[in-house]
Image 1: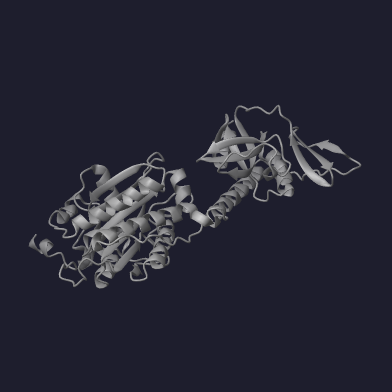
Image 2 (image 1 turned 90 degrees about the horizontal axis):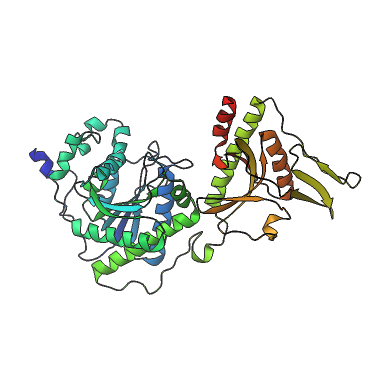
Length: 432
């Protein structure tokens, strides 16, 4: 047991300029063959890297005297021990490991920041075990002296942490609290607070160190937020402000009067197109389109070709019986009758427009489309057309909306008025 007291690889005699914060190590969690937690549309390793890069840019922009070091800048595998060694070799003054939380259900939300210490609850221990589990994916981890035989799934292995005396616990706690204060101020979610747990990556660092969980990838709303440029930039700005407060506190100086923040989706750039969110939406739409085609084929149907009226044939009703197409000033116009009601069972609609705020009737955003339906999900207003019993009929509406200019219109499914996946709709209809 005495060997544990030596804590190989960790030494507190490294020379560091007293009271100065000159070197910051940013650690994007996971990477390479270690994806971390998986969301419905994203992987933890990708989100942490995107946020870390934005945070590092902000520090470089505002603190030219601070050396910023990343444990990784691409999708590569870096062992937990090497992440700590990178910081130790650099004689870093602060180590920040960025992660996304997860849970078997979609219910939990919020942000929390950890410092090294013994878990005071089973929940904290489970978070630590999840993040430490990357060790098990490393080749030869059992014989790696860095890990001292540590097994993240063995309760007995965590005894080694009880021997550890963290000389930087107070400073770590200071930064952790600064971070949580910023999250609480800027992001409308649950403040889960500052906690302690046995994280190997911060156990091995010889400087103030924290591991921050910036949201639950298992919660659809928080996953969407972390995937968006606005969400990533907002989290990065929170970390910048926390760093600014920490640096000012350590050096007994004032924060910069004005911070330079030039990130997509934030401040002056907030109104610009959100590339990350848009690409994610397109990927989801393409996936749904492919599945809709599969359902059509399984039902022995082909997507109907839209009927476009000519002046000699001024109006014709399509297969659904609800959408009429008419020629008006040489421009296609889609009109839906107002007597549409919720239909029991599985129905299909076409989603053609999404907005953070409700759009007034007749707004130019609709491009002349009327009689639409709207539902809310994940804080967004989603506009749809149709309420069809088959994918084939929904395809007809989709075709017309795309001609109207809504190139990303895609088919979605409902069951008794509640949104479900296309796969769920297919299974329900197969049971009938």
